[in-house]
Length: 238
Image 1 (tube, one colour):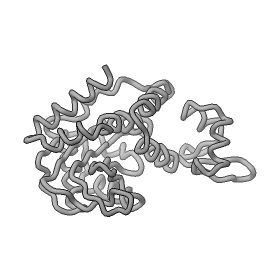
Image 2 (tube, one colour; image 1 turned 45 degrees about the vertical axis):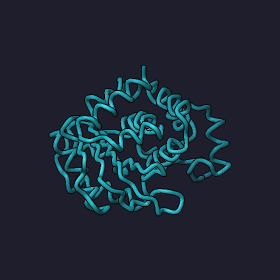
Image 3 (tube, helix red, strand yellow; image 1 turned 60 degrees about the vertical axis):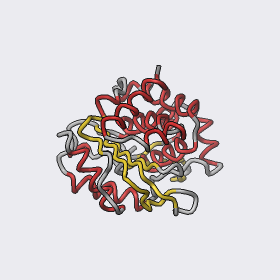
């Protein structure tokens, strides 16, 4: 089996579910997959996107359980996620000087590159733009969780998160009809699918609270925004 695909057994192990659960989800059309030679096959990018969508619709309890399941996957060398090591002072911009979808993506990649961990801004921006063209990552609460479709490990020395808050909302495809405005942008640049999904689960828990999101939106500067982010992380993880 190719590295980019799963069968029922390997996907069940990856998701920490029973094979019968995976089979039922696939047969009911709730999990993207296809039958090849009578066997179910699932591609890694489609599984990642399915997990992203589930995270976007989940509450904190389910997100915490999902993060815990991903953390238990020792085959990927899972370690503790330290957002203080991922979201650096130099990767936060308030306000983010961008007015269009394209300039937001470029600016966010430049922020990530300020960490010294991202070596090719243009290539990362292109990868993020391609992911956005598939399906917008903007949520109804005015936050977009940017990322490439596949980890860009060849241009990353280590994982990094960038955070930017624009002074006004930008059309970014959020909301039920795609007409919502987005003003908080978070770029997750990971070195593997597993690292990305674990980080996404944690970040999703952080931004899941609308009251806290309003406080973040009102942050007067980058220092305050980062502190709010890390305080919220400490609060939900204990």
